Amino acid sequence: MMAYADTFLAHLDAVPVYRPTVGCVIPCYNEAETIAGVLDSLLNQTRLPEVIHVIVNNTTDETVETASHYAGLHVRPDATGVEQSTEIFVHDIGENPDKKVGALNYGYSLVEGCDYLLGVDGDTTPEPDAIQALVDEMASDDRIGGISAIYSIDDSALKGPVEKFLVAGQRAQFAAFNMQNLLRGRNMAVLGGQFSLFSTQALRDVVGQTHQRFPWVRDSEVEDSLLSLEIKSAGYLTKISAGARAHVGGMTTLRSLDAQQVKWNFGAIELMWPGQRGDTKGQPFHPNLRLRWFEHLSMVTNLITRTMFFTLLAASLSISAFVFNPLWLIPPTVATILNFRVARSMRSANRSDYAFALFLPLAEFYMWIRLGHFLRAWTKFASRTQTDNWALQAKAERGSGNSHWAPVIALAVFLGALVAIWIQLSIATQSQVLAIGWPVLGIITIMQTAWMTLKILRRYQGFTV
Image (cartoon, rainbow, N blue to C red):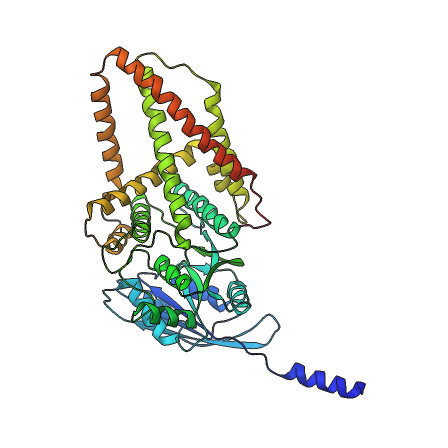
């Protein structure tokens, strides 16, 4: 009897376990400097995708030539020593009016027969176990329609203090966003195109329900956010991985950061705002947009408190009415502690991250930069100006355009107008304005400080970003 049982179990162990198939799609636009590193990182994965399609579009550099060196079959052992293989194909689709969206949809048509589609940006390098972690989590629950890696901004090979400052700010921004998603039951508001795994069945369901030809559409400035909403609306879960990690390229100039952040904010506003301007209908009550609403309300609060403080301070000094109160040191102290906790939550935090967190003027200057992006996006949305923000971002990344100076000019005009109005007021009126303004600011600041304190006290449940 025992011999029969041993034989049965041996035969059972020999039965092959189904291995889900993964088709990787890498949309590329002028990625000659980074595509080799991306493909190397994919070939060094403990779990290879079955196929990798590099979709080059609208490129003007040597992306095709660089990627072509990797074309063909590659065989690698997995973690247990068993050989696995992947084949790399390089497609140059030439001029493509739909840009990244068109490249993603082209790739989707090539891998639709796979169980999963892995979307990877042309400047993203995953850690060696990233694909395995995403596949394991996706396969463990059929309700998951898409799952994103934890992203951090690559801070290697930075050239100067400005680049280091901007990347440190983006790293802190990404870390805070990722932690919020992790603490919300790992429900991911945005399945970022940098490194996310999608169920192809979920993508087919989205295509069917929305009557679209492909999963990604050009209507939105944030194609990944829109697709995430549609996957959720199709009845699937959108998650962030607890273990898969990937490093993405950051914006190293004010010009490129401005273009990227304005595009992201503008696209989010379109999704949040009731009604419909183009082919994409706003969905203000969609569960995936709750975090977006919170972010925008938080930015409004930051704008109000900072504008009021510096305006009231200047006004008080102008009539020698300012009296220092040590209580005003509490909010910046709490903000610094919160920034430090964010840095501590980063698995790969370095000296630049801690310097950014602990030296408040750095974090404060970066917040003012973000407020400029925020105001530019809302201004563009309110003006109903028809602009191609994809093209503007590409232009900015090439080093062209001066739109990033618009917030500075607007701030100078605003301050000039305030000064002109202030000097026309009588001393009695000026004193009355200050008597009302400072208490109002104090109430708002107390509420904001209390909220930051709650965020400091919140347990991170063992998560790192």
